[in-house]
Amino acid sequence: MFTGLVSDVGTVLSVEGDERLRRIRIRSSYDPATLAIGASIACSGPCLTVVAIEPDPQGCIFSVDAAAETLARTTVVGWAEGTRLNLERSLKIGDELGGHLVTGHVDGVAEVVARESVTGGTGDPQWSPSDRFLLRGPSSVSRFIAEKGSVCLDGTSLTVNSIDGDHFSVLLIPHTLEVTTWGERRISDRLNLEVDLIARYAARLFEKRAS
Image: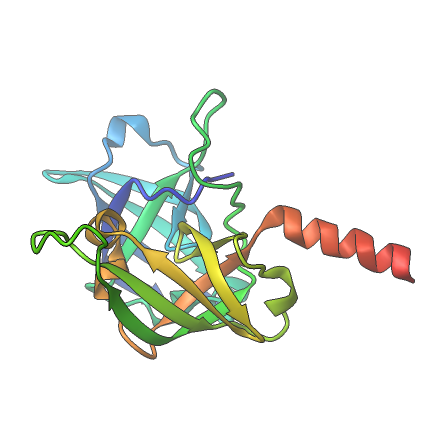
């Protein structure tokens, strides 16, 4: 279980394998002494299991395996050397739940349709603008996305600003743009989307009662 609060940005060093199984080596600033084989790390959304750990001057290099289902349903299939990833380690009992409950089970892939800067309201020319992103989500999950509800995009917990059919928007503050891969996002980029866990179960219960 995760919260969608990114704790590091890692870099893919290598990818080996095919469409059935790929091994991915990722460099991060995590202390290798605090990682264990079998640990879960959300890597730009998908929850992946650590299968190898190497010390590194910058922190550590850990390896994960992505199986056919993950490759078919997420952006992992497009990862290559140099790809930057939002990383989050799994929750521990007692950790602050600063975002929302995230499982690391991706529901689909969203696409960036537009990006625009939003001027701060202070009038201060030094004020860093936020950015609003308009995204298109899979039609199969659009009913789980609600205005002012939560979504997880590439491992980042965000609040939905508006929704229109399968399009929805989110607002990124300067801090988030700086400490995640969102600052690099451009039109047509694809992002791993996980809908809110509570929304998913609420919809399921409603469907059962309606039937």
